[in-house]
Image (cartoon, rainbow over all chains, first blue to last red; front, side, top):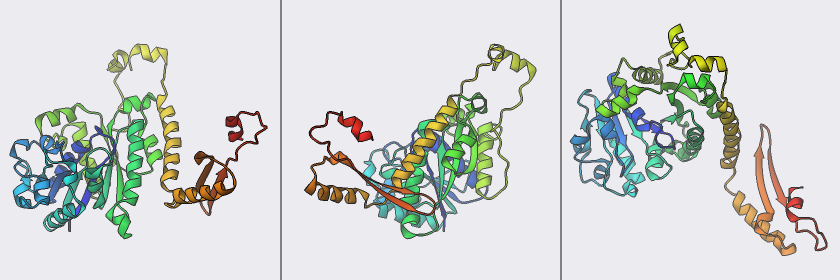
Length: 269
Length: 96
């Protein structure tokens, strides 16, 4: 039985798809058979971030409507053998996702996968609520910014009340905080909420801090999840987060300001 | 931080403001969503009963539920209309 992970945030543009792509790739690189599903029907983008946009034939809604089999729709990642992408439909209405349909597809995938990563759309409409509904674990992606923190808290409320686990009285969904686009410099200057601030407000287990990094845009430009950029700070931060998720004790990095040399201190930069 | 900033010694602390605003807002929103489902219905029915005796508006009644560690408080607040001879502004009375 696969473990279902939802990547959610409420607010758009905070890094859900970047995180889904990186996290799923990270799990697959560690040897787990992993699938990543795009729940953003009508605005699919996971395919683009994963670099498989030209290989999409069938999609999630086709499988739900039984117009295609799961195996026809799943795209095997070119870089990693045990990673598969299930793209969202680009043309259908977002209401074409149904609870029963999603459950059936997840059950079928559950037989062969270790992890299923659900990339939630922004907002709290059907795609987002269905991405959360069947989850075992939730990664709440948050930027150190007021509207993102507030929306994250709202998602925590929904996770705690409107999920299969909540409704059946099972053990609650495990919630993790992933703070993205973080700048230790700005936090130190008091211009940006610090990791501690956000954690204090949301009181969530901190899975990782992803620094605001040029590597993220480079990765999406080239269609390769940023975790594959092993030299980059963001890539390393995602790898740390995956290892923490899998139970390793990895100290947090990219939280504190690196000591600057005299010259850069003098001239800025 | 460049040399000029270093000497100027300015430190914006908008993050502290953000944190404080969020703490208040999040606490408020959490309290709202932990309200029992029956509160709106209870409020509606109470209003109907009170209206049998006193002519009050829809907004004159508030029902709130507060929780702390070992008890729950259901608070019912009804603002009665001012007597006809009063000249005091209504808004002011409401607040007291």
